[in-house]
Length: 216
Image 1 (cartoon, rainbow, N blue to C red):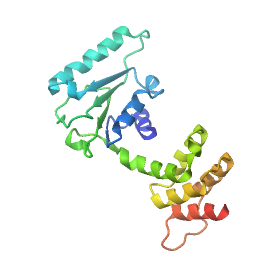
Image 2 (image 1 turned 90 degrees about the vertical axis):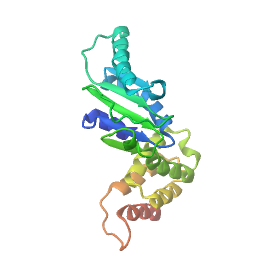
Image 3 (image 1 turned 180 degrees about the horizontal axis):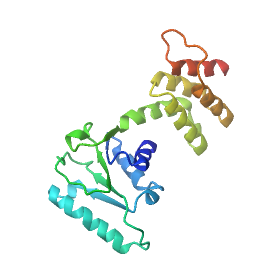
Image 4 (image 1 turned 180 degrees about the vertical axis):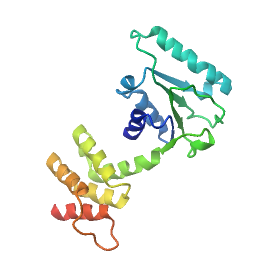
């Protein structure tokens, strides 16, 4: 979600594809994103399965936008519109779909290759992001359940591991049942500092993680 939000805010990418088995959760989180109203004038959700053709989708987009503008209490100037295209339940060829200018499109699909559905600027696979998180949660214990601060710190630590699964597992085990936020800060400090030396055949991330474990 953070990666998608960053792409949207920077306005450098206009078509983002989200794929994988957990795409429904990501799509719902995007719909509920608090910042979306400040980033977009309109947010339109289109279910592809309810339309028989591309032309129907193209007609439905401006219709929904007009409905939103008609019922809106705030008459803000026209701006960027977020278009959430729900293609979760089926595989459709949407390469010919024409998206009006000023629209940021988000395509959600279970397909592991959204490029077969539509050309996008960026594809985000949910499995690539969920596996590190699931491994961390499994090994760190139940302490994350009741602490939003530790959850946010866990996200930062996982990001600093750059997808190194063994490092994530070892780090989580070192933090198992650690409720002191300062311990987690020490882990983050270790992961973000410049290494004084690097052991042969060992990645920089592993050097940091092992250094933190030794210090524990």
